[in-house]
View 1: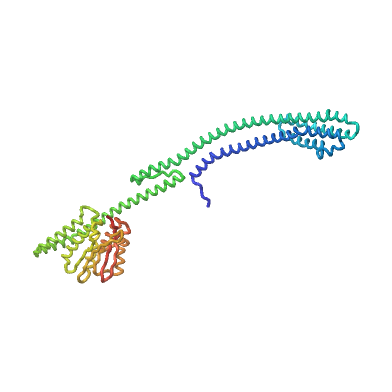
View 2 (view 1 turned 90 degrees about the vertical axis):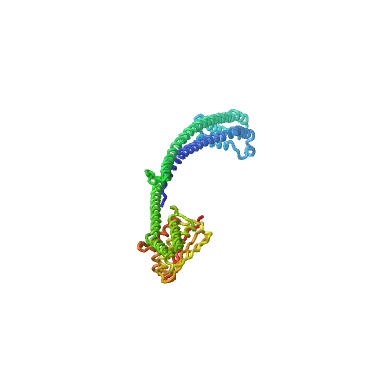
Length: 480
């Protein structure tokens, strides 16, 4: 399929044609004129060359041959060889007939016409002398004929040849003057044409440049507006060239960016809502009521030290939960948060709960999204340990892997079947929604917050074996 030329290409082709066509016509005209001058000049010089040949040798050769014939006719052929007077006259007659047809000037042609007549008469006189040369006693008469007929005719031919050469030379000078005049005219014409071409090219190129730069300027202005945050701006689509394609693409891009910005805004709102729901899940009446009830029971039992420890743990727990409104806290602060939570829960579930936290000291200063581990620990307690008969253990471990941190929360509780594990994984990824299942919904909130803040390559991973326990990994980037 033949590729269609673009609109700008067509404009540039027109600009090139505006410059090239007149220049090509001018060059062709100059070449034709030069060729004509060259042909005329060569023809005149050729004519002069031929005439000069006969002007130099013809008279002397013919006079000498006729003298030999008169003086010694018997040995004339031996002396002259193949050169005969009639042959010379015949050759001259052919050459001057050609010159007659090649000569342009009337005066030159009249001189050649006279030369041809003289050659005809000369041929007749040569014949008469040759006949009389065979008769003895006609020497004096033939010498007189040589002087009066032959030499007079050759002198006349010589003079006419010189006159012809003069005429052609004059014509050559006139041709030179014509060439000079024509060259001057051509130069003036070329200057005029070049000026017109230059002026036309400047006007046309200015129009083309304006047709290119003006749409670019307008597109630049709307691009600045879009760069300042105005995604409602649109470029004009009032042409059918490449700029229209750019404007259309720009409009589509701005529209998509506006949609993405709106999506990000909605995601931020959802993120904040998710954080709020997580916070609300932590500060729930049941947890606070049960904790306060345990504190009252300890106070009534006179266990003051444990009351102080419980109140201190509860204070630390809520202090970390609030964190002065910060989204990120250090891993050490997150560790203290879950430690306070587990201390409180251990007072309530001292018969079934043991825990251990092993996070290396060198990881303490790494920042982490607040409330990342506490929901995982709570999930391990309520859906792992409490559903198991007997005592259970929750283990929190932190380790570094290249450019990321891996935090694992493992319990040796009841675990999950393969079907239940698949369902929970779908809930975490958001492929399924079941708000009635607090375990899946809490893990979904944590995973969504991690991916919204760190990217989709981070988040939660879960493994579980029924009857053995569950392990949840929180993978986040290692940042200073």
